[in-house]
Length: 207
Image (cartoon, rainbow, N blue to C red; front, side, top):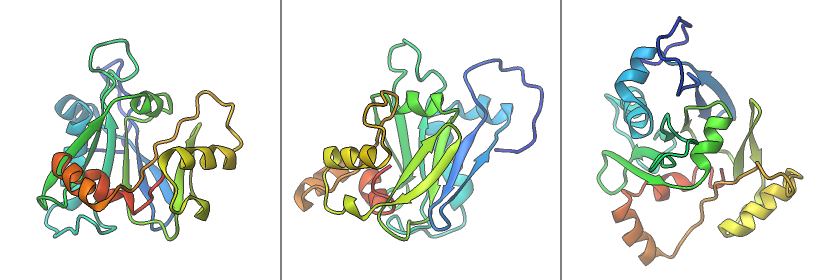
């Protein structure tokens, strides 16, 4: 179980012992520490996501499109190392296709950037009051409203966010952007990926 209790650990590397819990309803974020037993049992990636989802949603009926659903974004403990398949990042939530657990994953540098920010996972609940993006930088976390993102594609959104943050030339700044596809394409896509990206994109579409 996640805990805020600090303890002397036998595991010497691979974790920052920090899950960032973001409540979009309140535009607040707090760190959630976890213990060695949690790390040993669930490892990271979809293991962390499945356990956090179970803890948060058990004994409740969840609308996959509702703000009460939880989205967990979690790389594995080897993210950032030059090892095969270590760059995957898992997205875990309640699927609108099945109404139960679903996960999807992606490659790229997102997992590495989360780890370099000192995070083992990112858990998001609630719904932003207006179109916003989530900004994480050196321990600073903000939910930033930006209506300019309305109707934009992922590349346009990335440019708008970086311009807003005055960090176009900052090589370590990355954006995870969600964009909306046509209905028929979405139907095919969410069947393949359990609808995780579709069900969560409307809450805070640009991360």
